[in-house]
Length: 315
Image (cartoon, rainbow, N blue to C red; front, side, top):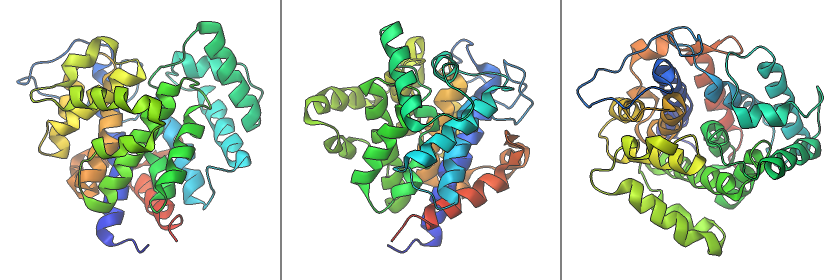
């Protein structure tokens, strides 16, 4: 497979637009839904993030992106262990860490193996009786860049990365579908989530097909899913309704934020898919200039890493 400049623009868009959505939604996090007439703008985050600073959504995606940019593979347990180790280092000083993620990382030493991370993830799931938070989906965007030429391998890796902190099948399924949709958009410029359902285990396809139809129904809006958008399924639906109901990248991110509640995460998820559809060129320059975050990166750094990740994983 040969990647064109258009493909690379969309691959970069998947990463940079996700960070933009994350930072845009930060000041509205856990707030009420907004009317369509209410302006959406960058501001200081609920947890003290600076204007234009991304939050945990992008910070957790960065080690995945860095690994792929280095040419590493996500089916390598040593690479996944390195990603978890980076998360532990980030979480030590982070302004905000999701409850599910914090519970898993808190059970681990400074340099865990993949097996240890998976065991901790399963243990937290069993102790709580659930582990379906949206923290796996918010960081899955870069995973798509690792397998633009191999959707079957992408499904496996998306689930494997999701389960490092979020054990439930809903997480693996949501991350697989979203990563596949990003891949499809990068390669074609089209939004097609329905067409990815066939990659799921047969017993779970009908449920996800119905969830997708609900999110893509005429008039559907992220506000419809706000009450439970901390759950990976509703976050998936909220983000999908934001993208499907928009005509531009900016509109998609503004719709995601107007949905309310977990605004930064829904907008980050929506941004990864909208960025793949519309490309990095659709991210306003003024937005890109203010983007920054852990570990001391900006939009240009994310763009460079995204291009490397895409180029180094096609055959």
